[in-house]
Amino acid sequence: YQRTKGEKDDAVIIKLSPNLDRLIYGTFLGGNGNDAGRAGCVDGAGSLIVAGLSSGGWPLKNAFQTERQGRGDTIVARLGLVRAARRR
Image (cartoon, rainbow, N blue to C red; front, top):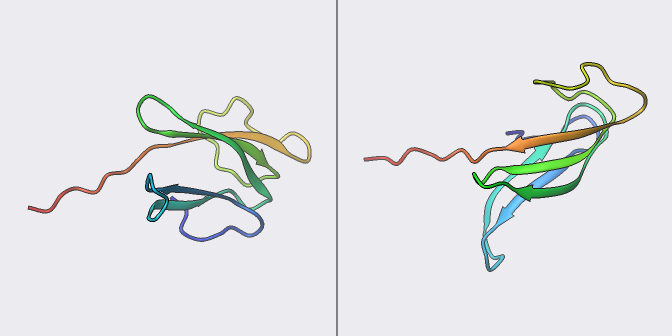
């Protein structure tokens, strides 16, 4: 997860408790360009799927398009929950 904001604009992803009084987690999401999250949903495994726009600098893994095409591109990212191991 991204602890600090990138060079320009980034999406901000947060999860709050059901009564909105506690931050469960939060992260920035983006590359070195202007990035924005536009929509999100949670899949059956509990991962967050985010769709948005980017002007560049995203790491590519299994990308349909391996190079940026034009001034901006659509991005889709899956963020899985990382659970800390319990101490004994």
